[in-house]
Length: 282
Image (cartoon, rainbow, N blue to C red; front, side):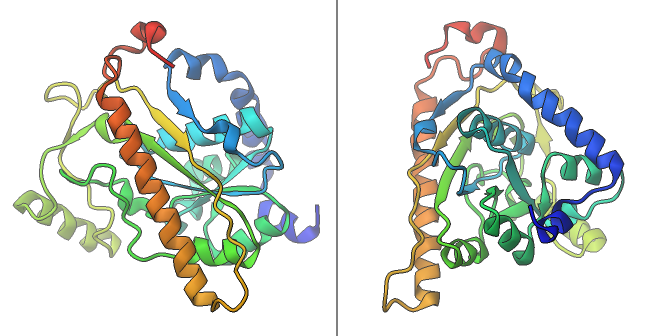
């Protein structure tokens, strides 16, 4: 490993200690994950060398995809996944920032991603960023990329395969009660813009079980898609190819989400207590 990569990954001793602890926890968490009987498919499609870029969707239960995707990739390829974090989170101070860094997360900046690709790291990115976490009523499982194509540009630059990965279930742990253009929705966006400078992270009015904020038990559905070749064909302009890669990834991920939603609709175990999932179909 070169000094340049060390500069990207080099963390204070406290973060290194946290990282070692998290690695041990990840190594022994399999029985806990299996207890919840998540539906997982497409693992056989993952490139064995770990050199690929995972492109996923965020849900309101963001930790579900951040936990499950790296967990299953590691079980299959043995590689550690490096999530690209939104700058607001990747540069966070205190324990929160330390935990993100210890988990392998780095700021999702182009120079950081390039360094990871130069060293054939397994990378995870959510092009929608935090905008896809704060969903109002009717926005569940919708991709909100707003034309972002940086991931596609970098993947094409390094001929990095893209693996779309979709998760369904996280947007149903809590139910959004108002739409974005409702009075409460507009108020939430105004408050968010006032204090953060952006309305993207405006939080909707939510409920869990009944009128409470107790999370609703939901089975998670995870699917890895076919790797997308990002090698640019000859005589195709670079910008045109970047748009093609972005649109192909977007289309494939939307297809995965549609398939998972259809599969979940026929699953009688989707809302049962996890302890009842021992009889759930694989």
